[in-house]
Image (cartoon, rainbow, N blue to C red; front, top):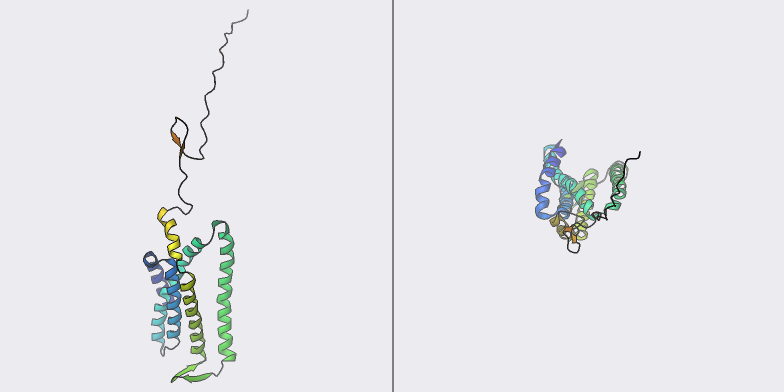
Length: 203
């Protein structure tokens, strides 16, 4: 429930934030915030404090989910969009399941009974897994900042025209005639009228 509240807030505010910062910047900054928030969540000593962090953490998560589709549509040619979406969705599901499986395996086998002190801070098996996960997301956010730099500026000319396919073709005019749209069917020219023949009634 805590994650749902934060995700709804983030999704509702994503449009206004993306209009100012751009979709790519919202995506990369959101990843950085999620990585940092996960590392903070790993050190929460009480349940209530952890729930508050989850609500705050879910806000950038909802914003990321809202701007991901516009980024995908801007970066993918229309003829390849179906293929890209059909590949991306299974990859996301597999990565999610793999993350749960790897985290559970590490916490229950490799890191079972693990405990150490780093700079006076005690680390156990669960907070170590969460810190590692947050660090991976943080690295992904920094990479997205570099890889998507200038992506929002590249999409502004198309957004300004309001037509991703570009401006409409110019109308051409025939000699001595009114202008007509390019691609329109030409009007049939009037031909000579057929001769009129008088017919009489036979006896």
